[in-house]
Amino acid sequence: MALNGWALFNGISETALILLGVVYFFKFLVDYAKYKKKMTPLLALLALSLGFMHLGGSVAFLLRILAETDITYTAYGYLTYIPMPVGFILAIYIAYEVFNPKLKWTMIIVHAVLGVGLIVALVAFDRIPQIVSLIGTQLKEIPATSETLVDANIQSAVGTIFTIFIVSAVLALGFNFFQIRKKMNENEAEMRKKSLLLGLGWILWALAEFFAKGQFDFIPVEMAIVPNSIIFTALVMIFLGFAPSKEV
Image (cartoon, rainbow, N blue to C red):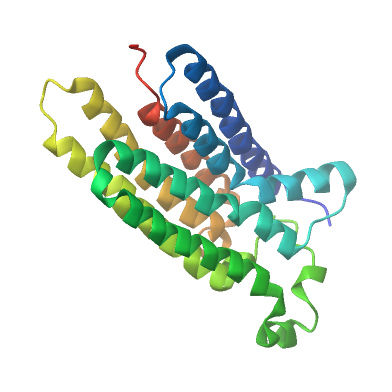
């Protein structure tokens, strides 16, 4: 089944998000070579992880375009959701190491447990008897996408854990950076700007990812590219906010 025009734009935007992550991955590595800031290699991995959260959609898109074939729900889920806990743990470590070291390991452990739960949900998704009996076959044998590049993983327990991660991004990262900004002095202009970028960036990212992953339950397919466009902008804000200052 051929992709419709809107799905083409959606697939291109998924691929663009991966490329954005790759570009900032190399940028942060170059920054580390210049400034030797210890967190910069972790920023490079963070950029890669957040970009690779769209690997499932991009691979599904490219396979449809180049080979007229598809990937399974299982493969789509692994490609999309395994990078997510990695990115979150890195973001929590970087943010809390700098701004709130006392809570750092508590937050990391909480998100690591969520990450394990997400992986367990992915592994179990195509083995749940109720789902298998309803559909009549193993989900891993069913194509992951239709002409609209829909991902059904979000309708399982994966979606529940994904939503918890999204809420955490808003509270533990987005709102937290706004609170940090309020406590800063007026003479800390650069840090206040970075905190504002990070606060807005994480909240926009979280909301857009929520709609992007469950997009066909919330918005029409014709608007599917909108969340990805917001995610692109939000990621740039996050990367700029986390970027090391140029002073050595």
